[in-house]
Image (cartoon, rainbow, N blue to C red; front, side):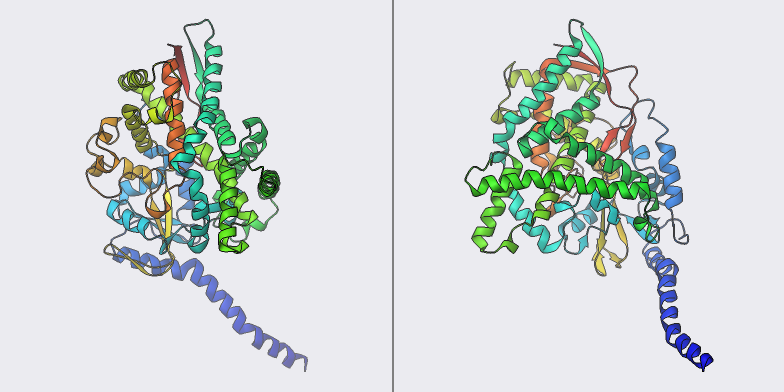
Length: 518
């Protein structure tokens, strides 16, 4: 009797065991090998699939190695340091190459025509599922899809209209002026002084986003910035384990810290939002900053549609606040610091920009309408974005088998778009693609490259282009104008050229510059 019961139990369990084993086998071997065969038939080359980890071990080794090697002599050819493994694979296998991110194949898409098709079809080519721990840094509009993205984008759009940004210029000016005065004090009675400007620029953009987005000073919001920066550092630690199933559930120190920081950030931002919503109810709303405009727009949407579901939930508003803080600060800080470094390397362009600024403003406080007359400065900022794109990489995945040009993309394949490689490609930008030449933007962004496709997209492209690009460019333009009004600058002998890829593109060892009062 006992044997028969055991036999029956085994008979019942056996099909389930076989099903589970088959699913594991399909996940770790059969599916990857099938996708590899399909991609190689379409002309993609790369390393053969290695069980479970793919190329990740080699990728982390080469990336770690690249970080130990500054670029010397100083040049703008930074891609081998920023995305060393992709650069290595493309160099060895060509543009139609693939990389294994664990058991998932990732194909490199560098053709601007294909990039255009991907960007124009966000419903088909979507952002891939992330490491679930990434939600502890930022979620929000940048990660939403479909109806949720449409709803949040619609509600957030009014806050970023140019007429609204115009009203924020005085707040941006106050933050810039604080930094300028600090630098003047550092120089004091000396003719010049050496400064690492990177911490001051990050403090500037943090202060700007606090004033412009939340109406408070950086001091009030510094805890949120500190926690978000800690989250980024923690994510760098855990990313090497992203392909190990269930790793995020283990009680490692980094995992626990990510969760506790996440809860604290939510609590802090929730308090700010609640105060705004209460002020709106009693008619004392402050709608001259991004958060106030967002809360107001959300309130109007709910009233017009007659139901709360049409508006953003508290959780969605919290995520947009985190996005304001992180993307608003990081992107602009990266743009300003690499523009300054580039102008140190190319004094002739620094002189041209300063001459234009004095022609337009003199020594007066820059006004919003006058900023549009800074043609040379505008070209310089775009060239800095081309050579040093803050976000230097995009990924997409197809939700179903889809056509992309002549390619057939099966589901389960990642599409990797290395922005920095497209921006530096001689095929689209000419023999001087890796040189600083703002004049290439003399006839506008659309005519800067050698084709009319998508060769320049530092803020993305198409329907999902970054909603905050005008804000970032306005802040960077004003900051650069005020810096050039007050100082000339060149690289210090102690400067180490080491751009590094973090959430955005940063100087690994700071930006040591010699400032001289004008």
